[in-house]
Amino acid sequence: MVKEWGTGTTVLLDMGSGSFSNYQRFFNLDELDAVILSHSHPDHWADIDSLAVAMRYTIGRTRPLRIIAPEGVMRLTQHVHGPLFEWGEVASGSSITIQNMHLSFYATDHVLTTLAIRIDAHDVSGDVVTLGYTADTGTGWQPKELGDGLDMLISEATFTSAYEGKSQHLSGRQAGQFAREAGAQALMVTHHWSNIDKVAILNEATDAFGDEVIQAHVGLGVLVRS
Ligand SMILES: [Zn+2]
Ligand SMILES: [Zn+2]
Image 1 (cartoon, rainbow, N blue to C red):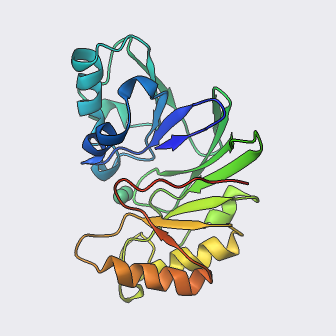
Image 2: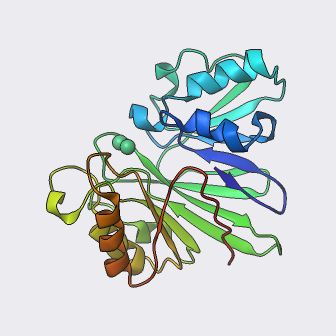
Image 3: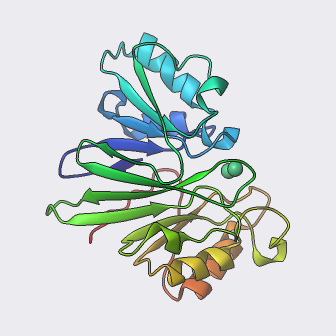
């Protein structure tokens, strides 16, 4: 979840299985302005049907929720339809604005259409703060394509370097190297496969990035400033 502190604008980046349960532990469904889905692999959208049911029947929300996704995701869902949901289709090169938050989308190197995201928002002082999110990608795309000024990059780091080239994902080493080449001020890694030692991934990423790297986990909050 990404919240812009100046305006309170709140968006979710992807909604894989388990994310909705965890979201409810910490935040209120009423405050959510938009859900951004990077691609149609279920580990990135599977919980949005549960969110839709809860919005409609549990909390009785009446304010429409924006759902932003590339072509093909909407038809996979069962309950995310009707006037409560405003779907917006994006493609590589698209840009949208959610209140005061500006989002740009970039196609990555993945099995099917997948969009990395650059978010330009504002910190508590009103200064522009920039967040990048790789979504899923192989090495045919790199986060430097998100442009300059990344205050934080959230990068997938699926496995260790022993698995490089075996799947369209990044190792910890590649995530760290690409984040450094992109000039990111900070790096958070996520999306590790559960059978792979995430400490080994983090260590690789840290070595390659040349600075401390954050491993995403449930309940972690990070304040990003420019
Ligand atoms: Zn994927
Ligand atoms: Zn994935």
